[in-house]
Length: 157
Image 1 (cartoon, rainbow, N blue to C red):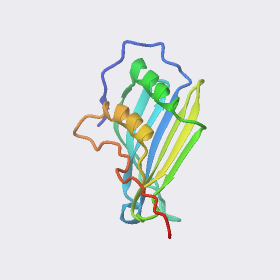
Image 2 (image 1 turned 45 degrees about the vertical axis):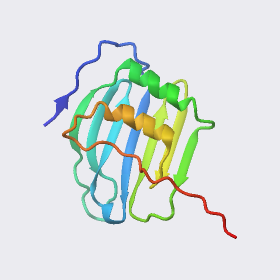
Image 3 (image 1 turned 60 degrees about the vertical axis):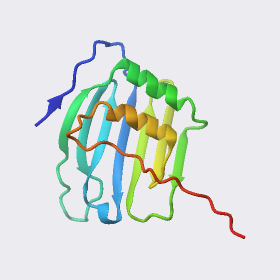
């Protein structure tokens, strides 16, 4: 069953705006259906998909949970948030956790291209973006996540 979100009144959204949130499970989360959220222009689709695939085994069909449109103000907020980032890539690794997952968050517009790769790790900027996306997902569905584990840096004596 597909549920449509409330249509937006604003139609002047930058059609070059693209965003993808892809969750890849590790350890006991491998081969489990994971949340994927993709935006093209203002249109979004929220699915559960299998990120890993066994050789010679047919990949499970994605399950579409929810489709809708982002408001222009949400896209503007996301683009404003990514202006805080120096460079075009954020990579965080928490080597102390082998299970959990990797979050890939990519944002592309005519203004900016930024990608996040978070291995069981927290990033405040990515969290702000995910919070905006989660505001469109009804409570009955699994929300997108960013690890709450902040890696600690230990000095070796």
